Image 1 (cartoon, each protein chain N blue to C red):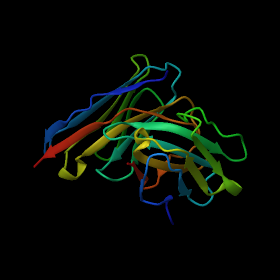
Image 2 (image 1 turned 180 degrees about the horizontal axis):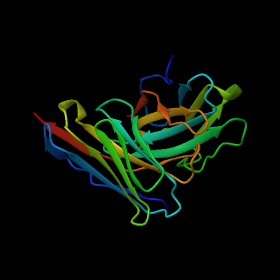
Image 3 (image 1 turned 180 degrees about the vertical axis):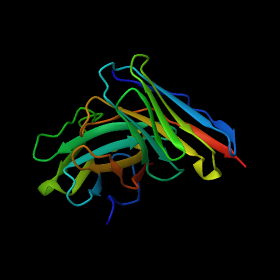
Image 4 (image 1 turned 90 degrees about the horizontal axis):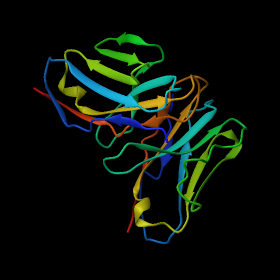
Length: 112
Length: 112
C-alpha cells in the first residue's frame, strides 16, 4: 500500500515568509509525528498526534511553529516568519499501535 | 534532557567483515530501542527493534541491549557495500507509540 506522503519535497522561501508542509500518513495509522533533521544532525522531535488526544507539542522550538491534524489523518506543519535556522529536512512519520514508525521522504526547507 | 549518543564516524569496514555500531542513552527508564538505516537523501527505515536485555538476531543483523550499562549495539555480519549508510539509534520510554529520541547517527562505509 501507499506509504507516508509529504509535500512539497523541496521548498525554498525567503526569510520572514510563512510556509506550510503537508503530511499524508498511512491509512489507518493513528499516530503521526513530525521530526526535523538538520544537516549532519540526528532527528529532532517536534510534535506527536495520537488519535483524538491532545497533541504532544513539547518539541516545537518556538511559537512560530504550529501543527494540526484534521480528521485524524492529514497533518500540516506551519512555520511563520521563517528564519535561516529553520532550514532543515522536515520528516513526518506515522504508526499504528505498538508498531514501528514509518517515515515519509521529507520536505527539504531552505530559507534564504 | 534525554540523550542518545553515537560515534558519528565515519566507520569504514571491509566487505565481508563484521560492522559494530554502538549507542549509549541517558534515560534509565527507557524501554524500547531501535536501529534505523538512512541512505543519503532518503528517509530513515527501521531495521531492528529490541526491548529486552540480550541479543536479537534478524538475518545478518544482531541488536544487543544492556540496560544496566545503558548501552545498545548493532552488529552487521558479512557486511555488503549496500550496507553503507548512516545508522540512527533511537530510544523510547514506553513499549508503545511515543516520541523517540534519536542519536546523531554513525556513518558506515563498507569498502569493497
